[in-house]
Amino acid sequence: MTKLFLALHVLAAILAVGPVTVAAGMFPRALRRAQADPPDPAARASLRTLHRICRVYAAVGLAVPVLGFATAGSLGVLGSGWLITSIALTAGAAAILALLLLPGQEAAVGVVEAAADGSRAPVADERTARRLTMLTGLFNLLWAAVTILMIIRPGSTTGA
Image 1 (cartoon, rainbow, N blue to C red):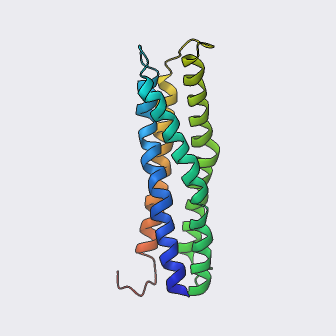
Image 2: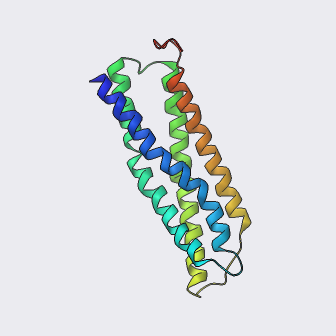
C-alpha cells in the first residue's frame, strides 16, 4: 500500500502543482499585455485561462498533502523533522496560493475585464504584476524546497 500511496502522491504533485507553477508564472506577463495601450484581447483571454488553470489545479492539488500524509503514515515517519519541515513549507505555499496569489489574480482579471467592457478606465498597474511575480517565485521556491526534502531526506534508505 505504501508504494501505491507514494506513487499517487508523486503523480498528484507533478500533475497538480506543476501546472499551477507554470500558469502562475505566465500570468504577470499576460496581465501586462492585457493592460497595454492598446490592450491585447488575446492577452485578456489568456489571463482568464491562466487564472482558471491556477484555480482548478489548486483544488486538485489538495490531493498532494492528503496522499502525503497517507504515505508518511504508511512509512511510519509522521514525527520526523524533515517531514514536519515539509508540512510547514507546504502549508506556507498553500497559504500564499490561496490567500495571496489566487485573490490577486482574481482582482487583476476583474480590473482588466472592467476596462474591456468600458465600465472602468484601463489602469496599467505594474505593481500588481510585480507583486504577483514575487509571490509566484516564493510559491515555487517553497515547493522546490519541499521537493528537495522529499528526495534527500535525513535517514533515507535510498543512499542519497
